[in-house]
Amino acid sequence: MAFRLGFLFEAETKVNLIKKEESGLFRYVIIQENVFSHDIGSFMSFGIQAVEEVAAARKVVARVSDISTDADFVQSLADLCTNLQLDPIHLFDVVADKFAEC
Image 1 (tube, rainbow, N blue to C red):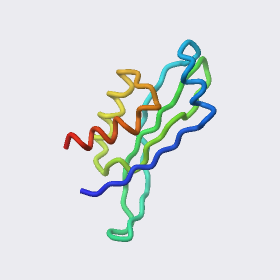
Image 2 (cartoon, one colour):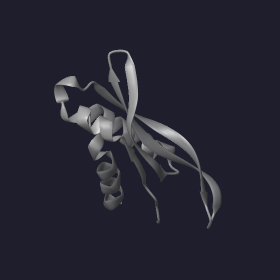
Image 3 (cartoon, rainbow, N blue to C red):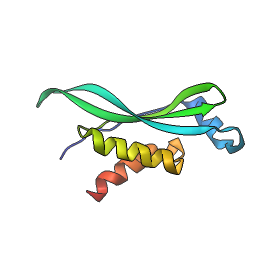
Image 4 (cartoon, helix red, strand yellow):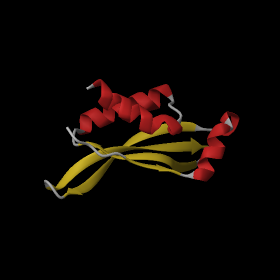
């Protein structure tokens, strides 16, 4: 099964993540995307974005797009990342490792 991973990470956020004492709670949420492939056309896919919550502020600090068309699979991975408070710099690797297990 071929898949494609996209990744967004803001450089300024990387500095903030290194300072653990200033970091807040990381919440991993599923995102729904309309994706186009030349082979199969348009389809719905799901990704994960990491949202850092500090006080009342929320900021998207990482995102992996087009993980799977299986929303339950992506949701369970997002829940696991939230429960374990995964550092967002590892999100891409966790997703790639999950596919390696399959």
